[in-house]
Image 1 (tube, each protein chain N blue to C red):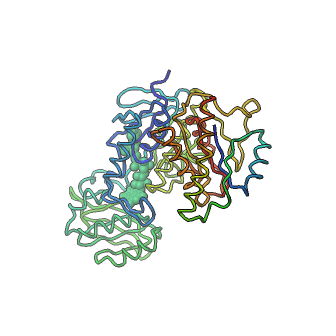
Image 2 (cartoon, rainbow over the protein chains, first blue to last red):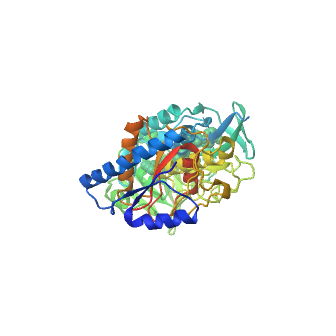
Image 3 (cartoon, rainbow over the protein chains, first blue to last red):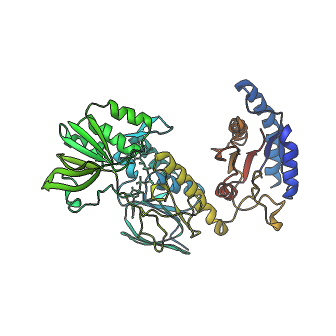
Amino acid sequence: MAPLVVTETFLPLVEAQAKARRLTPRVLVVPHPVGGLNGAELAGRIEAAAASLLPMADQARGTA
Amino acid sequence: MTDFDVAVVGAGVAGLTAARVAAESGLRVVAFDRLSPGGQLVNLTTVHDYPEPGGSAESWPVVSELVARAEAAGVTMRFDEVTHVRAGEPVRLETGGGDVTAGAVVIATGLGNGRLGLPGEEALVGRGLSTCAGCDGPLYRGKAVAVVGDDEWTAEEALELAELASAVTVLVPELPTWSAARAERLAAADRVAVVTGATVTAVHADGVLEGVTVRTADGERELAVQGVFPYVGRRGPAGLVEAAQTDEEQRLVTEDGVRTAVPTMFVAGDARARAGQTMSEAMADGVAAGQAAVAALRPVTGPSLTIVDPTSGVLPAEEEAGSLAGGTAGWTQVALFSNSKPNATELLQGMGERLKEHWQLADLGFASKPNASTAADKDTIDWLAQCYRMVLVAVGD
Ligand SMILES: Cc1cc2nc3c(=O)[nH]c(=O)nc-3n(C[C@H](O)[C@H](O)[C@H](O)COP(=O)(O)OP(=O)(O)OC[C@H]3O[C@@H](n4cnc5c(N)ncnc54)[C@H](O)[C@@H]3O)c2cc1C
C-alpha cells in the first residue's frame, strides 16, 4: 500500500498520471502550499493529514 | 542455496554501509576485510568536510558507529582477504578462509596506498615512506618531509604534518585541485612550501630515506627529507574481479552509478571509476549499492509492493497494475518516500510519527529523491517495493 500525499493544486496532475498508469492510488489531499510554511503552520497540516492517514492505514491493514 | 545472499568485499565506509543496508532488508550478508573495519578512516585523526562541507568529525566515533550499525543489522564480519571474485550466478569468492558463494557481490575495496612508482620505494615503507600523517607524523617531529599529491586530502595531511615537522614541502605533479580555503591555510602555515609542476624522479636511502630528486620546469634538484608521504599512484582493485572493465587507475568501471555490466555485481566507494573520493560519497555509494543488491535479488525473495514513480513513471506490467500489495513484508514494514520539495520531508516525518505511535512501530524506513527536479532512482523504488508493506509518498508541494 502506498498512500500518496498531494497538495490540492497538484491533485489533477496526480489523477492524470494515475489514470495513464492504470492505477487508483489512495490519495491524501492537503491544502496548498506546504513549502514555505512555518513550524506551527506545518504542524497544522500534519495533524489534518494524519487524521485522514490513520483510518486509511487501519482499513488497509484490516482488509489485507 | 548460496552461503550468503550478499557478499561485500571491503569493510570501509562504503562496504559497511552497503552491508548494513542489505542486511536491514532481511538478507544474509557477509562483509570481508583483510585488515580491520573502517578502511581509510582508521588512518585519519579527523574527517574533514563531514558530515557537511566545511564540517569535521573525529574519525573513531564514526568508525564505531558504522561497525555497530552493521552488526546490529546482522552483518557477518569476516577478516579474510578476498583474492578472487568470479561474477555470475552464484557469485564465487576465493578468500583466505575458503571459498564462499553469494547471490550478489558489492566490491568496496577502496584504493591501494599512494606510491611514487620508483624503484626501491617499497623497501622504504616504514623507513621514511608513509601514507598516514596521523599514524606516523610523530616520527618526523623536527625533521623535514615531502608530501606528494594535489588533492584536498594531500593538503590536510601536509597541514597535519606541519604541526610536527621542521619543514613540509608539498610537491604537486601539475596544479593543485584543493579548494581556495585550503590553499589559504597552506599559505598561512609557517613551515609549508608548495611546489607545483614537481615530479619525484628518485628516492635516496641508506637503510632509511635521506632525500628525493625533484624535477620541475627549472630542472632537477635534490631535496633532503627524512620522510616522504605520497598520495599519488593509488590503484583500484583490477585483477580481483574476473573480466572486469577498469580505468587507467585500475578502478572498476560502472554503467550507471554503482551498477556494472553484471547484474549481480556492484561497486561502491573509492574503488569505483569516477568516484569523488570523499567519505560522504563513499557512504552514499554504500546505500545505493546495498539497495541495488537487494533489488537484484528481488526475484528470489519476491516483491511486497509495486511502487510507481510519479515523476518519470515506471510502468507496471499489465498483470501488476492495480494490485499493489502482496509478497512477504509485514505491516510493521513502513517507509516514507519524499520527493525532496520544501517541507515535504517534514510533512511526511510528522505523519510518519503519528502512524508510528498509532501502530506502535519500532521505526520507519526513509528514502528520498536526490532533489525535487530529478526522477527517483529506480533502485530506490525497487528497494522500497521489496522491503516495505506500506510506503507513504509525497508528490505535490
Ligand atoms: C590521506 C587521506 C585523507 C582523507 N581525508 C578525508 C577527509 O578528511 N574527509 C573525507 O571526506 N574523505 C577523506 N578521504 C577520502 C576517504 O577516506 C575515502 O573516500 C573513503 O574512506 C573511501 O571509503 P571506501 O569504503 O571506498 O574505501 P576504504 O576506506 O579504502 O576501505 C576499503 C577496505 O577494503 C579492504 N580491502 C581492500 N581489498 C580487499 C580484499 N581484497 N579483501 C578484503 N578486504 C579488502 C581494505 O582493508 C579497507 O578496509 C581521505 C583519503 C586519504 C587517502
